[in-house]
Length: 179
Image 1 (cartoon, rainbow, N blue to C red):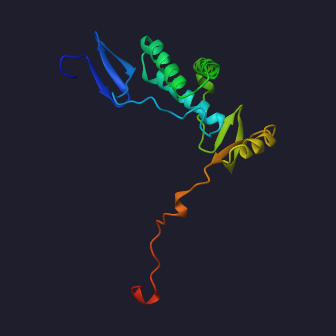
Image 2 (tube, rainbow, N blue to C red):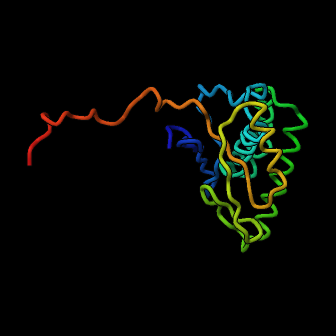
């Protein structure tokens, strides 16, 4: 515990001693800037929605219900400052809360997603990975939209491994040790 306090900040959590129990709140350092992926950046909409979902999950998973209103207000303020439209924020929050409550009500059916294969309704979904090129990638993904059990995934086209080599230099035959 901190001196003269009933709380301890650890990673992204503030542990608070309240009577004989511990409750949690989402902790942010004083240097927290509130900057996340800007809505007007050249990224896919699904990545922007992922930013919203990530913040919602932080509120739900890192804080006690008594702090949820305060933290949801903060998330909405952060997203508005990053250019997100209010209707997208609220519709995503509504969908995420509905999915979380639905998942909570059917714990027996919970299936953990694999890295490149997911199971929904007991069937495997395969991912088709293409480079992300704005406008073109979204048009290609629309072609595969109605293909059952095939989902699109994107990868960046700028790779540092073109410029940075991590392999060792090849030794000439004369420099190699003899056996």
